Every structure is written in C-alpha cells, then in structure tokens.
Length: 110
Image 1 (cartoon, helix red, strand yellow):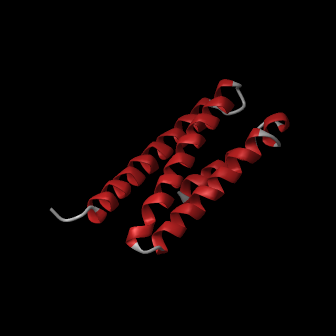
Image 2 (cartoon, rainbow, N blue to C red):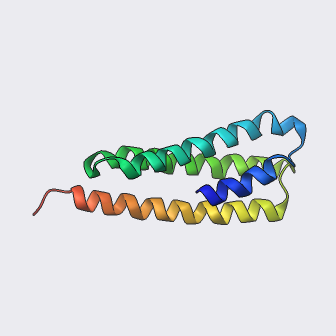
C-alpha cells in the first residue's frame, strides 16, 4: 500500500488544478486512511481485525472508482491509471485473502 501511495503522490502533483484540489485531495486522504487502517489492523488482536480489514477493503474499492473518475475526465493519463489500478487490484486481493484467513481462524470449531 505504501508503494502504491508513493506512485499516487508523484501523479497527484501532475493533476490539473481543478481536480488536484478537489477529487485529488479526496483520493489522497483515502490513500492515507487506507494505510492507517492496514497498519492498525496489523497490531490488533486477531478477533478485532475483521472490521478494520473490511474498512481497508472498502477504501481500496473507493479508490478504484475515484481514480476511474479522474481518468475518465482526462485528469489522469492512461499509463498512470493502469499502473495504479493494477496495484490496487493486487492490494484488494491481498486484503481479501487476509479477510478470508481471519474469518476461517475466527470461526467456531466444528
């Protein structure tokens, strides 16, 4: 997530001012919130992680949509959009795997 944010941060400064100070700030905030949620979840006890990992997953999904809006409005170049999207897809898969593992570990024994 940190590496993807670094890429976004480099792209953020190239956004047109109209979107940099509106949607760009929102995307930046969600990136930071997602990093915070992932870090937070990593230190929680196992039984308390699920809601925080779900929160991080929702934020990644929101990032994908908002980046698509920037791309559709021609504020984000194709190559940059594709790179960020691919990285966010991988992060989404990783969070989904983490969530699945947590659910399996927290399920009552049969």
